[in-house]
Length: 196
Image (cartoon, rainbow, N blue to C red; front, side):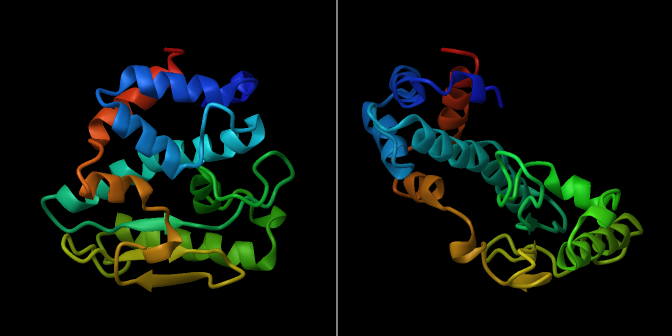
């Protein structure tokens, strides 16, 4: 992501970048408020909020948008199993962690519960790759997704709506209220990553 090295002064840099790169000061302020970031937010707190924002704008929003606009059947999922390994992201479900679980290469290093999540994910992907129905298809109006983990709650389950409280929805609420345009927010994120 490239922001770990820019942690000092991160809140101010992110706030300034959004204000400069979004067409409306109100929209920039709304995004910052949604993620609890101000010019004076402590760097570690801002870092966490910005990572949540990054996940939402770079992964969650595009995946949901594709599922909603896919012309045929779409199968949508959330991978919510936390990273079990020591490091800065231990305890968080991170980008590409699902791939590590999917390919089963780390099963010997996972807890019994983590292995169950990996196996369930792998089985469903094999079904999909073989033209079988892996789980109930996404409903463009009502949602519906397969949730893998966190294993302390359940290995897998189908959620009938758009994920409910299991995912942050700040950006979607701001979009529905007409406060932000997600394409513009995404461009502003890209410009921030580019150092602008």
